[in-house]
Image 1 (cartoon, helix red, strand yellow):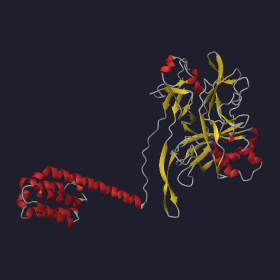
Image 2 (image 1 turned 135 degrees about the horizontal axis):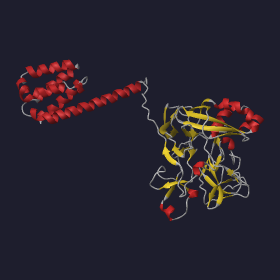
Image 3 (image 1 turned 90 degrees about the horizontal axis):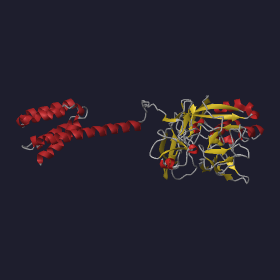
Image 4 (image 1 turned 180 degrees about the horizontal axis):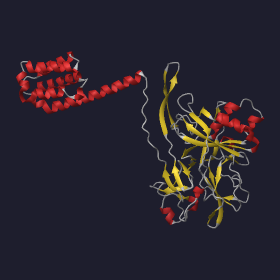
Length: 475
């Protein structure tokens, strides 16, 4: 067997719904299923059904793995279901491994809560790093091509993985399919579309060859209360069928690659399940429901034999199902059951991006409206402050007609400088010039006219001020 490692970088947001349901909240998967990469290769290589295409895409001798988010060149793994942390705290503060915990009063007092989401990378320095996975949510509307408008009652939302995320996956070739390796590599490498709404703005990815670091494993079995165990971690989803051909959530140890002498200790295992109906694009119909074990589940198998050599079990292995890891190092713990790994979060550098200039009349119009609204708000605020502070200066005397004349001047002259000169001449040479000069009335008005905030909008500011002051003088 040979394994080829790839990198998948998201060039745009990618929509990968976890359910084909058309109603209710739709969540986006935080990984790319291997069936997407199988489809990319099949679109270029599957022309007619023959022995070659059967070997590549149906036999399970070529297995397209799931793409997981990464951090520092390491492929992330779904947090094991056997990881627990105290309620009200974070996993970074304390993480416990379920099958290595003692069932006593101390453990029950911790009120442990199971970890069920997020991806982590595990390095040789016993540091577990939570991978940051950015997601975005967008509201869309169906389009009525006949009426050339949005359809009524056809609103829906898309949750998507944000562009820029780097993911890693692998393709495994058995010996009888190794000579097709170059063809698969050529078909996968390059830019492709995955997920939903590929004809719109979503799903653009770039795939390239790139080695990455695999998680380390232990060669020796785990000893629990004097008994020998092997921990089986589900790196991908697992699907099993019983002897009657029905889906089962209770596989035997033989299904996990062991002999008949081995048994699964369900009291120490932590298993989660899934169910969904895949959409068959070729037939434009749903296939039978896929029911199986969710990735991140952990089985504890009691056995005295050596670990199996296989790394894939179950069915639909060609689509990324069935990949497991025996005795991964991250399932180790101290004597008190606390994980031997130190947990931390990925540091995400916030980049200040310069927005691109969009040549759009609509954008220009909206920006103009935004600037106008801001100017109006500033003017109203300045007028209210002037009225509140100086209204007592103008309540005595007949200034109502004076403010009416100033408003008429502002209605005629748009230029700031010309308007200032006209108001200055009216105030200082008119019949009420002496009253304006008393008690600093003209100085207050002159300060308002020369305010830098009114530059370019003095006409509107004076009109508003004169109107408000005329009301004050009449009251």
